[in-house]
Length: 313
Length: 306
Image 1 (cartoon, one colour):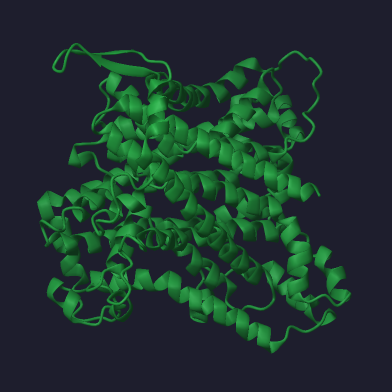
Image 2 (cartoon, rainbow over the protein chains, first blue to last red):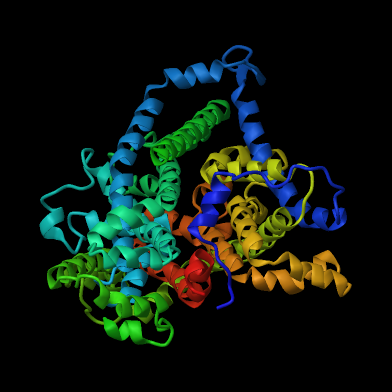
């Protein structure tokens, strides 16, 4: 196989932006080719990433003013008015707390399982690895909406194949529905995270363990002392993507609204954005979006910093 | 179970496994207890991952009266093709339209997104120009911006230019893959030797031609990976179509089935269509993953296979 390597080490060096290559000034060669390569992406990225971000911020700074109750509505600059409304909005903060609680439980469970499966796949303990890898990955091919519809049926007290369980435990009740959704998300994404971690494990040269094995280290010891520290960057990566995914929860709870009245239109922050924008109150919805995006960024960024510091120790 | 692992599609013995078994006698032997334990864990979770899909398949083969009255995990009368026929005929074949829409959004979108990302990633890896690091860092920041956060502002912008509720409203935003730029950049640095580009230059090939004839081949595993992940992202995308589209004939299949599912309480006959539709909607992705698995696994982990 002549295909060269994208190893965990590459990802790491790019992630931590290792010493920037040669800062010396040189004349740019092939400017035309560079332009041809970069311009299409740059235009699309600007139009559909940067402009929307800017536009959301702009919209969030406007307020609607009316002359009297039925007067014509005009948008005027309102400064941080919408943000004050965001911070006073109880349901919004409840939804943030809800997804944070969700994340604190679901993300470690999901990544713990993914890590366990990846380590087992990488150990000599299993037969039929190819089958397991495929079987565990299949749910990733199921779109979130479809997975939620499917599990919605599986949870239902009378349609489920597990009625013995579902008629006694009401998974769609206000108490449990959040965790029922957590199960759907876990079901979809464990295999995907497992594959990312497993790929990192495959990139470790086997020679590294051979010495340890000659010294008599068992699989558990090798996994704990050699493998896990080496694949930490991959685990951090899956952690960040999971945190982002959690804060952005939308499709699964939106589908669950038709199975359970416990899922309200303000259940997650993104549902909040959606329902506020369809009132329509786009300025407030834009402010929700901005706060949510900022929260996501701060959280994933501090997670990155936190794990890097731990690694550095 | 092992029959599945031995079919030609999935076969290809893994090199590392054989290497490992050769090395095994050197260290302490794995106790049979830990082997049994590991297998048990994996088998239990195989059930967890596959039973819902098995249930969906079984549900798809049943008539609506047998759906509730027979064992949910085993066949009754085999009505799969009748069910598919009914689904396809329902409301002038709107379901097929949704599947085609999804294929178009995801197929064409992912293809173009991969091309644009690859060109940009390649330029970032292989050329030196001012602002290169800045550009890369902005793109990297873009990886952290969740697509759902962009849906609402995109809707507001598209409504300014009267493009909401059109094909383009869903298609155009999906052409951008910052993650693709990131991945192809790393891959191009590692896999396209400068000497090769230099040689092509000496042969008189232009830069752009070199990219399309030489470099693209070397970057192929990364390109398949980017394509696949973008394809899945678009296929699974829900918020953007939800917020952009009103016209049912423009829906991707996820949004269509969602719409039906939320009407099940009013129109109970829809339940059967939702189930068989859900089953059909996951088949293309599974096939795509199986067909391309040789490539995307290399894209993710080529490092170990030398």
